[in-house]
Image 1 (cartoon, rainbow, N blue to C red):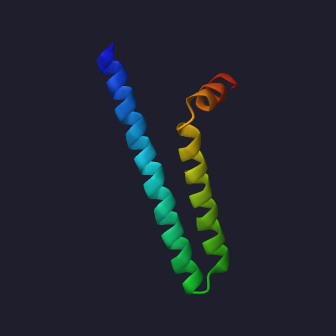
Image 2 (cartoon, one colour):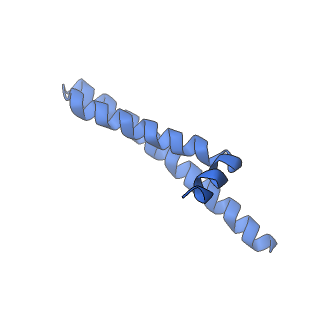
Image 3 (spheres, helix red, strand yellow):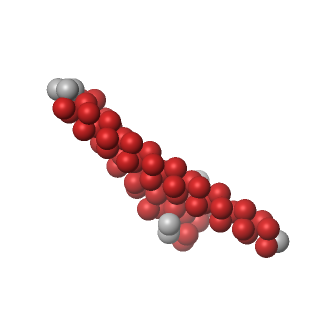
Length: 72
């Protein structure tokens, strides 16, 4: 049972790191798009960064995650 809990924690940490990376990358792409005059694309990348960071913060709240899973 402890192996299952450890694996679950490792998977959650990996997912958390991946979402953080995606958020950072989306912000960098938004800045690049804005620098080249592509405001709409920059906006879309900023929304993607916001979505990734929101998903990241929701994963860090176990009660919130449990409510989301059980509410569907």
